[in-house]
Length: 300
Image (cartoon, rainbow, N blue to C red):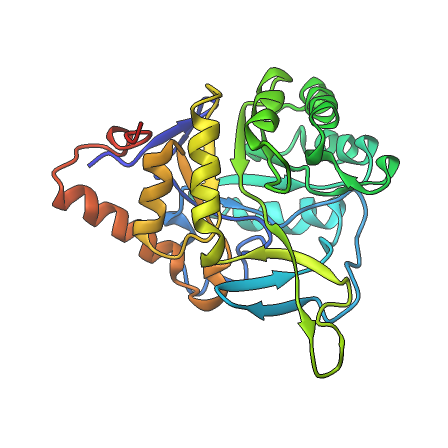
C-alpha cells in the first residue's frame, strides 16, 4: 500500500507526524517510538532567544483533555541548531521546525537562521501574542496574518506552514488570508482558549488564568474546521486537534487533511503515533485501498 503524501513538494513516507509542543524535538520519545517510522517530527516552538515560559502551575487536567499555559518555553535558536537538528538528522524522517515570536522581526530572525540548515519545512505559530497589537495573536486578525505570512515568505528558504488559531469568528477567512499571502500549507487547529477554577481555593488553577485546551474533547471542532478550510483553499492542510486513535486520524484525512499531527495523546500514550500509523495501515488493507490519497478529502 502507498502511504506517501506530498506537501508543498516535500514527500512524506506517511501522513502521521507529531504536533508541536507535545514531543519536544524527539529526544524524549525516541526510546518509545522509532522516529524513522514517522512522516515527520514537528519540533517544539523555537524563538530567537531563550524563553523562560509562564509561571507555574501551567498544566491542568480537564474533562476530555488538558489545559496548558507553558508559554512556549524554549532554549532559543542557537541551542536548537547546535543540539536538536543534529539529533533529528540521525533519523529518516522529515524535520518541521515550529517558529514563534512576539514581533515580526523576531520571527524573521529565526527563519533567517534556519535558512541554511537542513530542515524540511517551517511551521509558523501565529497564536503567539503580538506585542505591537496589544497581545492579540497574529492569527486572530486576517490583516496581521497576511502581513506576517508575506514577510516570512520573502526570507524563508523552506516551504512554510501557517498554524492557524481556532479562536476566531471564521477560520476559513484566516485560511484564505494565509493562502493569498503565499503560505505553502496550513495546519489546524491550535488549542482552544479555556479556563479552570479551583472552587476550594477560589482561584484560577493556572497561574496564567487561561490556557490552551487540547485533547479528545476538541476533535469535533477541529474536524469541522479542517473540512471547511479544505473547501476554501487549494494548499495542503495538516489536521490536528484531539487525535488519539487511527479512527480519529482517518476522520481528518477524509475531511480534507493531507496529513495529521498527534499532540496531547503523546502524554497519555507515548506510543500513540506508532499505534495511529499502524491503525491507518490496517484500515487501508482491510478496505482494499491501494493508497492513502484515495481517502484524502473523500467526504464532500
